[in-house]
Length: 142
Image (cartoon, rainbow, N blue to C red; front, side, top):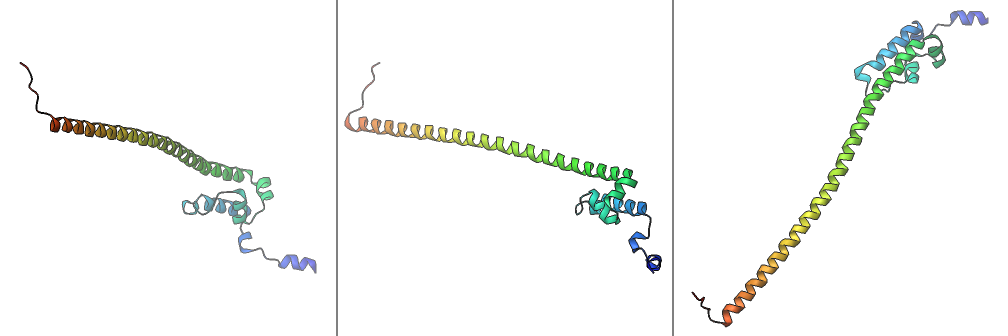
């Protein structure tokens, strides 16, 4: 009776194809540019898509496992490049913020100096006005 159950057992539709073909199709799905943003190329995802255990992949198809790892490294290097670019831009922003603070300090210094000069000119104008009001014009000798 047990033998008849095994004989009548039909494989799942995805399992009717050879394992290697399923793995290759799953790997091509992971390398598809349209699927790049939605799926990370991992061994686990490859095995899930192919309907194969990880042990089977590592034991019987190590070359496909190596391809999947290379794919992940290639995509990972893009992320590393992106992260290094972000890090460089953040460092540049920090440097620019420092320069902005220096520029603000310099502007404040020049504003204060201009205010002092304005006050000095106003005081001199008042002193000159006081001299002219209370005295007659002096003659300059020849």
